[in-house]
Amino acid sequence: MASDIGWELYRSFLGVLQEGSLSAAARLLGITQPTVGRHIDALEKALGVTLFTRSQLGLLPTEMALTLRTFAETMDSTAASLERAASAHGLEARGVVRVSASEVIGVEVLPPILARLRQDYPALKVELVLTSKVVDLLQLEADIAVRMLRPSQEQLLARRIGPIELGLHGHPDYLRRQGIPHTLDDLKQHSVIGYDRPSAFVRHASKSLPGFERRLFALHTDSDLAQLALIRAGAGLGICQVGLARREPGLQRVLGDSLSLSLDTWVTMHEDLRNSPRCRVTFDALVQGLLHYVA
Image 1 (cartoon, rainbow, N blue to C red):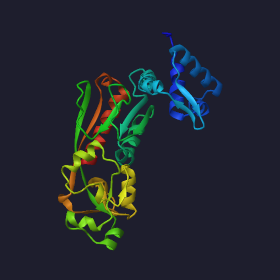
Image 2: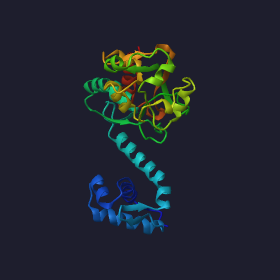
Image 3: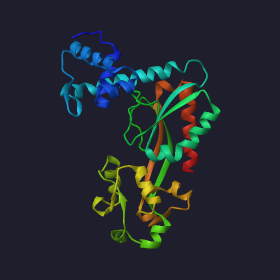
Image 4: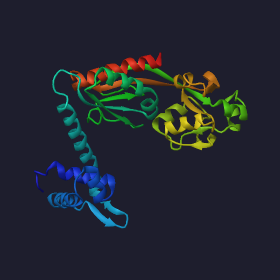
């Protein structure tokens, strides 16, 4: 096995894994299809394994390719972090900072915070990653993360924002048609919007809300944004951040404190980034903006 395999080979390998074909990977990477093909052949030869098999559906990864995927993704994340760090030379807050947040926080809460940040620091570039997964800050998958749980790794800097309350809400049009529920049992007569497949958070939350489970739901989706859109469209009753509902007249809370959840919110980043101007000003802006939102 060769010990001096170039990163470009792994980059093409990861591109084919993500896109499923040489041509799509070439478009993603900005290189030619024959170049991607040569990279895959060279990598297979260097490693002494078969990475893909051809089918009518495109290139299918072998078991070995799937085993190597995590390592290639780590290399890709590290390379991106290296580029971000290199672009932020000097004492000025400039370069790229990568921020991870949930869908609803990223779409409904962070945009005005990031807009003000860019006004104050125009040389700063922000990559906003929206995901329900907990990104690995230790592996530099992102520079800063807004999390709905307390970080446990000692290497992370963390600032607690406080609780974000969730409650059951509906659109006034829906409530005029179907009436207002007064007890949890009344929800059996309503179109309730809920999850499709339970996540770790859903399983934890269910302990506080006995009866609020999948068989109750008329509409299922694991996307928090889709749930919010369905509530706004008058499709049924669903869980929404109380702070969001308060700022728009189209959402009305029902059942009050009898159906209430709390998300303990934190802003976190790797301790090695504490002296990075681009990360420090972004971290501070997120903390102040989210504190204002929670208040």
